[in-house]
Length: 443
Image 1 (cartoon, rainbow, N blue to C red):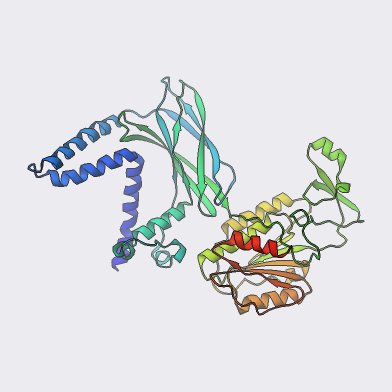
Image 2 (image 1 turned 135 degrees about the horizontal axis):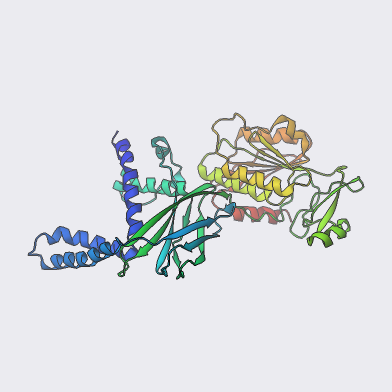
């Protein structure tokens, strides 16, 4: 009951902290802290040093606060966001700042505000170990506010650096470059844009808030997978990439599409290249060849870190453009002819928003999809009897299987084998290295 009561007060403390950080600069926070401490001891005027420090702090803060009460500048703001970002990769976007007044504006700052939904009491108690606050004193660990603040930062999903606005002439405009750092996959919701004008001392900032809601979808982190032999191909990668799938060697001409690494130069459609300015190739009717598919298990994860690693591994194979069928749990995505980019975008957006499901329901490879591909890449957030059965079921159809379970610590014993089965456990703490070792083992 006590912890539930504390959790209900955390949001108020969080809002106060954000309010202070928005209106006080780093130097202003330092002066405010020193003034507060000195004021406690300065009530006793016989303590000369504390009394003098409190007076000095008041003399600095009072003019700064009064200076922040002057009218705010009249500016119009317009944010230009791309559609997607990627976890771990900084993103640049622009904000157009229009001066609507007849006065020259200078010394302003632009601050972004991202929306964050407070965690529920249940989710606060079941926080994965990766998000728990490590270290700290026992009081902080018992009260839980450091862990709660970590959850709020995760809910925001990104951080945006403050930007200084260059001088704007009367009725002029500037394009301001902003830098966003995505910290997790999924939607990031923008709420407000704040115009800040520091006082002459640089301690307190006058704030003008503009409501500018917007959304950005952060895609999962991807790792290099070049050199990994895909199942069911019977051939090794060439030049670090698996040969692009061919739609038959002697079938009827169907369409033209963009060139992909591995396409034969004999298939280039020179007239279309000259007309469009980019290389395109001819595509023929599919008379055979190996179709590749991927299955991602969306349940049974032993930890949130394992599940996030499984999504990143799946996304790494999706972006290669070599898959024609992707099963995310029970949801199936089939690549239509001539729509490869649209297919990749839809699948990556689905991976950005997928959530772990408890229990085995809806986790199996759909029965009508098992025989559609000659090679399957199965990404599992764990490894147990259920996953072994899934690999055996797919291999029983004659398809090749590359199983990639995400494990913690020591690798589990692989007790399933076959001419078309390859199981390669990946350590969740270092996925990039594990995939590099897997690529090296296939050479």
